[in-house]
Length: 402
Figure 1: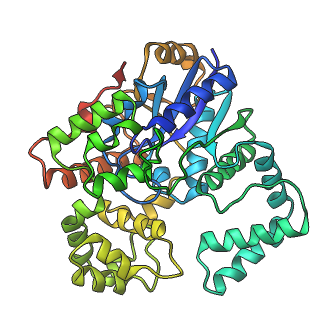
Figure 2 (figure 1 turned 135 degrees about the vertical axis):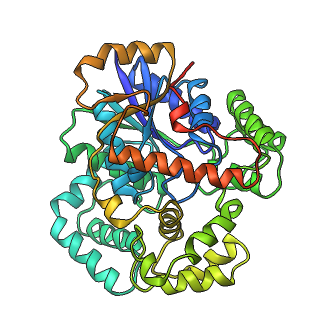
């Protein structure tokens, strides 16, 4: 059996994701699609709209055959570390190809861009360092260093100002770095850009646009045209059980408490908290009535919104620099769910897997898994502020069979 790997958040799973899954299987002639999916907290440093179990059900009902959890240490990391963790898991799952969505739509420019940077690594790193010293954020410094190289060596390259191109580049980079036989390929994004608001004249919208509509007061019925029926059902079920979707805005009382209970020196122990921000975190948390007010007060040219949110995520979940940086390699494959076809694929490769396959967490002792369990506890705490219904704990949740 041949498997195509995909890296996803499904926050939530929408029609664009459905197009991606079906095209990934069709264009690679794959029997199954294996998705590595972020758990309760995501790469841009925010809680997932609904928990990983609801999102797994969305995926399995819409063309995905196996869902593997991307551990917290990778799912909340910056783009290169996020990609590296996901690629290593897909490699361990013996995927033949990795198919990612991009604004580019062609794989050659990604390969050209990788070789451009790799062949000029010293100059690239030197320019990044210079730009950071000039006050640029890390993503801005990367972009400027890349643009400088492009001008010196004309070719067909990707636009690294586009968010999905950035992740795609890091997938290609990660495959090359571990010398994986997995072949990268890309599916053109259609209809909606990453940050675009919803357009009622289309049936595809970005996940960002869908979330903004929901948090701006639109009903599920208002955004139903952008969702497969399974996704609509799972969101409706969540809303019926919990009334609200997860967001930092809804978690703000707990986030505020998590910040204010610490001294400035204590805040520095948490992952991504850098010297100079600890006093601002306390000051603005104390004076802000909402999360958006807090973030707008904290935001500066040096730090991106996503970088600041990842910092907040680690403070809220209590994950320290030492804990996060101690883990650079995946140590297990945790199955969140599978179809009958996915189960056949797992049975076919199970004996040759180089990482242990986890279906139940109770009997497993692993430091990376322990951080995932802690993240779920903190996610549950945020939800239970406004809901009388419990969400599933990791210990109580076997893989979903679809």
